Image (tube, rainbow, N blue to C red):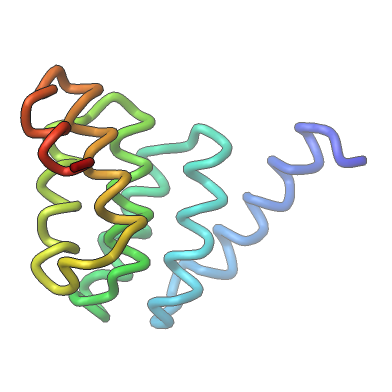
Length: 116
């Protein structure tokens, strides 16, 4: 099993490799890894770079929104989820994540509408 030092070492090596990366999928996937390890600001930069390359990528938008929500930035997360849902209003993962972010921000009424 890997310990946290091993994970941090691998993340730093990946950061080096991705410095000039122009592949939106790879950037988004590494953003997920960083977000899951609590490195939100670095993750957000990668999600933003990925979205510059593929602005309508629902997976990246949803991952970005989830990271923002985990970091307590619920208002921005809701904006990102709304962007994702404009592209695909039936995306169950984005809908669920949006509803959760709304509830966590205290907007229970709108969250209930999402979950109905």
